[in-house]
Amino acid sequence: MIYIEQPPFAPWLGFCEALFACDTVALYDDVPYTDGGYQNRNRIKTADGVRWLTVPVARAPGQLIRDTPIAPGFDADRMLRTIRLAYARTPHADEALHVLQPVLGQRHTWLADLNIELLTHIRAALGAPARLQLTSEMRIADTDRTRRLAAICAAAGCEVLWAGSGTRSYLDTTALAQHRVSVRWNEYADRHPVYQQAWPRQGFAPNLSVIDTVCALGWAGTAALLRTGLATHLQQPAPKEATA
Image 1: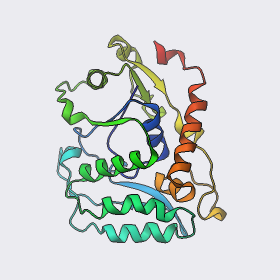
Image 2: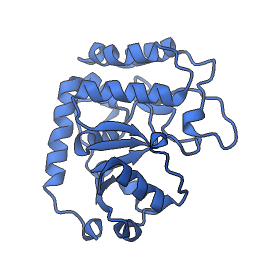
Image 3: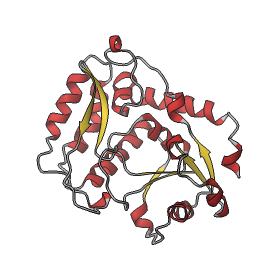
Image 4: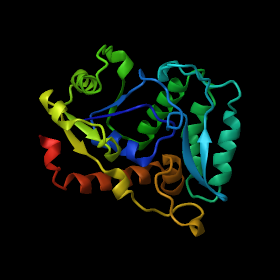
């Protein structure tokens, strides 16, 4: 099984679950960078509520994700201080920062390099089995969306695509089936777990960066949470369209 996503910065739990669910997580780095996504930002919880952690980038028309540079003004130390202040009262803040700090401290030039290295360290800290593979290294020339997805699956040796519910509006499962690719919907947002989060008086805020979960539960605790949720989900019958 394979999951395909543009390389995110400090990803949410849904992405991290794919690291356990799939044999391969393909990082779609050879598509245009677009503003407003999660390639250069993600959310954490602070004393003032949920806020964004953002890596500023330099933009150019038609620029691919792999060719997107980090803006010179990015202050990694300031970002780390923001995280430390936000989670100072949590039991595993130091454990989370032990993984984040060495990566952010390297002063990467390219956004994709930062994200890929951070994802590699997160995967290792979670003990997740999936391999990370760049779509740019697959050298797929086809620009048709469905055929390209099918070619990525074939290049990775996978016949099942682990897909989020957000892709339902455009993912052509019938066309994929013609390329011998079936779809398994993960529906993670609908089953997001609740845990003892920082700043509890604010109420629980779902869909934050995995930083939030690790500060609360540690890497081992976060991995256990993901494994348990995944095992429960996989026991449910797959929708008919996923096996067409």
